[in-house]
Length: 203
Image (tube, rainbow, N blue to C red; front, top):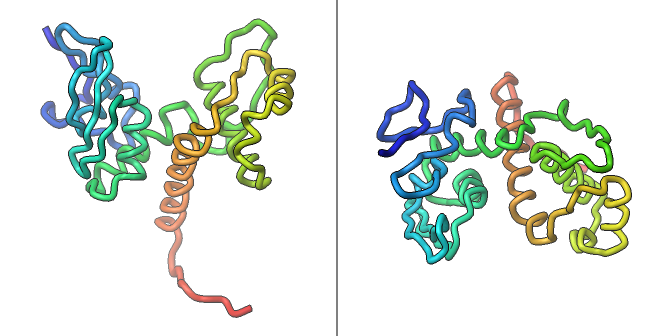
């Protein structure tokens, strides 16, 4: 028996994510004999791999192919990288990516200390990852530093249970996700402003 988690207001055949929706409503579509699958798979052709619960992925919009489809990467692809995706789908996944880790705006950037033996929640890890990314970008720190043993030692002294992201993740997924959040903020600002004028400033 198959079950699905979709919004009551959504079309059952096309359960889109909307900016006003609760992301938790769209986490999985459970099928008989298989593990729960994220709703993002509706936009990708996929075939089961040898390892149970793993699938390859081919974007239905631009045909980009992944040998091993990772849900977060596929979400970011639709939100910012796919050049053929329609605007509605792009905007919906932009809002989903921007809020999926519990990070909505700058007011949530405070990081409190945890006890030494307490396991960090996914939300706390995502928050620290984002803080590190912004520090690297704003301070013009080379991304390779994230894998430097001395830098890792500093992070471990500050937060023993935190494992920093690899350089590849920092420069791809995390950077793309932050770009999505920034684009949303800019779009929201433009929508609220009136009588905006574009021009070139002579120096």
